[in-house]
Length: 259
Ligand code: ADP
Ligand code: MG
Image (cartoon, rainbow, N blue to C red; front, side, top):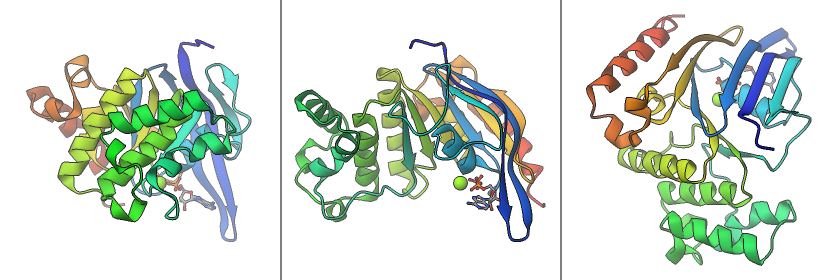
């Protein structure tokens, strides 16, 4: 089970058949993510980022190519992969405590031990005092933290994060980036983040993949050096190297601006 490569995509493509024709949402994508690494996907809207995450999650098969998770071919969703979205999808009629146990209930893994682990994560996120509150009583940042606890409660090895911070105000977003980063490092998770925020991509990742659109392809890969990636996302923004990498990413994406 301890395969050094958490995610492997080989010549992966996905085409959607629509009324107007064939849409190559993802075309010939090759990428590998080492266990414990944090990578980001950036690119113009419609370049296939969400499609790619859904493929990795096993929600539907690729049209071509192969996807492996820890060496095993993906043939459907597994509890090894957790998926967190921009919208938190907390159930409004369940309190926070009941919400964080949802994944465990669905996967039939709810027991004394897993319940205690979920509560421990809730404590770690600073929300233990809110366990009897309902989602509508919480702020956006708190709700996203609950959603993260719920995702982590089933102990996935890999986390797929589709713009999880984009609906939050700037300060909340920065704080949550640090919290998510330290939590994932502490629990040795592998993560794939989709973001529109280039500084977030530089601050959080070991590597950033820049995609182009129509068809969705990897255009550039930018390695973020340890001097940045070893710092917390917030602290990394203050070192001079940060600006260099932000600028490089900006220039790569600028190319698509007027298309
Ligand atoms: P991104 O997340 O980068 O914005 P998506 O993966 O959502 O991109 O979409 C990639 C392309 O595939 C877009 O052109 C989009 O319109 C198209 N697409 C996404 N989902 C479907 C679908 N279910 N049916 C048809 N086309 C789709
Ligand atoms: Mg998307």
